[in-house]
Amino acid sequence: MIGPRVTDEDLLEFGQVWKANHVRWQLIWGGFPRSPADSASLKEYRDWLETALRRLDEALPVCRKAGILVTVDLHTPPGGRDSSSACRMFQVREFQEAFIQIWEEIARRYKDSNVVWGYDLVNEPVEGAIPAGLLNWQELATETARRVRAIDDHHAIIIEPAPWGSPSSLDLLEPLDVPGVVYSVHMYIPHSFTHQGVYNNPMGIVYPGMIDGRWYDRETLKKALSPVVKFQRDFNVHIYIGEFSAIRWAPGNSAYQYLKDCIDIFEENGWDWAYHAFREWDGWSVEHGPDPQDRRRTPELTDRAKLLRSWYSKNVAPSFSATPETNPK
Image (cartoon, rainbow, N blue to C red; front, side):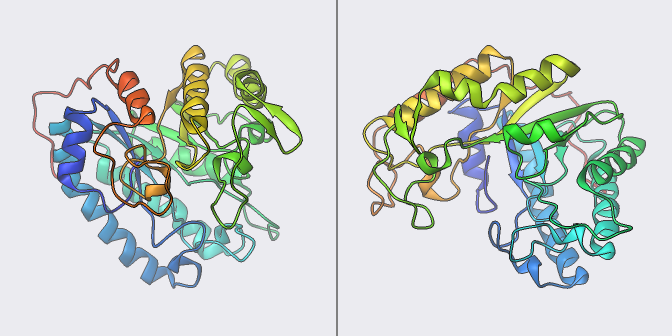
């Protein structure tokens, strides 16, 4: 997973040196969950989105050269979020209609690109109270996926469950009656460990160990991910872990051990995954050490970086056609 400040040089290094073969490209306006979109007009939102998509257009040939497939992630939906972090497109018809139209436009833009792997319809959807006459996430995702599939018959359509794309939220989602849908969750359990020191959360929490009154180790993580295993088994679907991470200043080798256990579980189940994040905010960076005050990359590879690179080295490079990437229309 990457942020909007990633450079062409970063992408080339990520693909050619790190041997990554995929990035989840955030279309994010300002931040998460708070964003300028929370109070922007639809015109202002569309102006921002067009600028963000042009940057993606410019990066696709670089990703091709780097051997990287791209997931287009609408991190900031039209309308943004309200003070409770519910997506405002579940409250305002104009934003809901725009969401569907925008995905039709994105599908037309990238339907002929073989560098794009898929479309992540919205990052961590949260519904809140839905007025009469508006669609809930199950309904909106289904309608949007059908519209996208009518335009683009081959790119993956990625659906995260509400609320927040958590593993347990899959219990609330029904498989969509649309071909080529991939189901995605984000793994930050237990949150008090992975996010320690973020938003004033207490620090010093060790993994494996007692966290929130419960022992957490690899077996506990497997139980937390059991709804995903069940969903995959029951419906024979493709699973994609769109985000997972542990803050770099977790005590000792806790972050490394957490990431190792997560990846082992993902791989045991045949899931695709994207680490959060490469050259975005340095709190999630595997290129930085454990000191929160040190914002510099370490001269030597961290154990976390070695772990990711050891897995990336097993990747199969994308089989791009000999035809150069066409400019999106």
